[in-house]
Image (cartoon, rainbow, N blue to C red; front, side, top):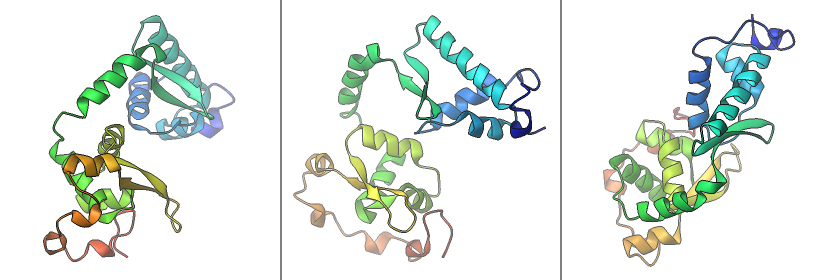
Length: 196
């Protein structure tokens, strides 16, 4: 029975792992996800997903969690509670002084040398999904959104003036030449990681 076929009837009761699985997905998305898309991915009725999301949201509020699950823009997404904004802002500002992980440094290098570059290209060059690392670099002010790719529509990223400031550079022309160290076939990768 598919999510679409059972959406109107309510279908079976909540699968035991649905709450866990919904939380896992909602922790990694960077934009609101519709109930239908979640139901299709979980192979459960939309009504069951809706009920479970509402229960989770209510529980987070009752338990006084630092995050909330909110219905926005025709979907659901996890957000930091407004009353935690000051502590989160303070942490992020302090976190800018913390050393970057190897994954963050590699991702930052790809953006610096390939900018503007879509996330798919970054992941293709690194060989792993970089969504979380990209979000971290954006939060730390080292990279920023730079419009959309004219062909694929993918969101592009570039380094910021803060990046230049932290590296002590006047402009990107002062970055050392990495061409001798890059594989020859990087240009053959498209934004999905497939060779073109």
